[in-house]
Length: 209
Image (cartoon, rainbow, N blue to C red):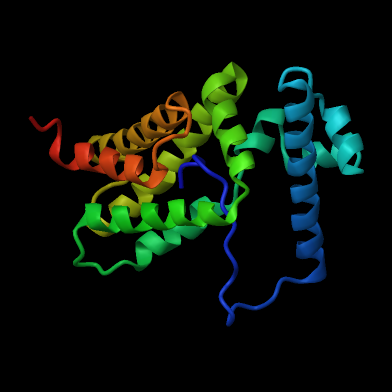
């Protein structure tokens, strides 16, 4: 939902298996990502070029651009917004809205348990410390806010473009971004799930004495 971590999750057993073409696409995307992370660790973000990424991933530069429009997108893009929004829509209609959000965000954080911690920390550091990635992340989070506003509107019966829904959705996005920055600034010493929960508590109750 927030691109704060990349997560892998296995498909349910009853879900149809992906075809060969889709599996090849996934392998190509992962090869590009892995090549990017390895090069950034070796020489830094700015020094890493699309040509180097393509060579390391054993694909052409045009293939890299076909999967990721910019270098920043390699760091930021994941496939989990639709999955998490589907989870949100499946919550009971009479469940308080913030309880639904807590459930889904805890699940999102849980996905990260299956990801390499080194990669998670590298990605998150780039998101918060590299200006180009941070700028692109702001654009990405705006798109996530649009999806969240649509889900809120479905639950509440409001117009997804109304000021109230937009403020609610984007305030939540901003809070999650701040939780991510706090995590990085603290050297990843705190539990990220607890930080997300604290952010939601502030969102729900405001600043308590």
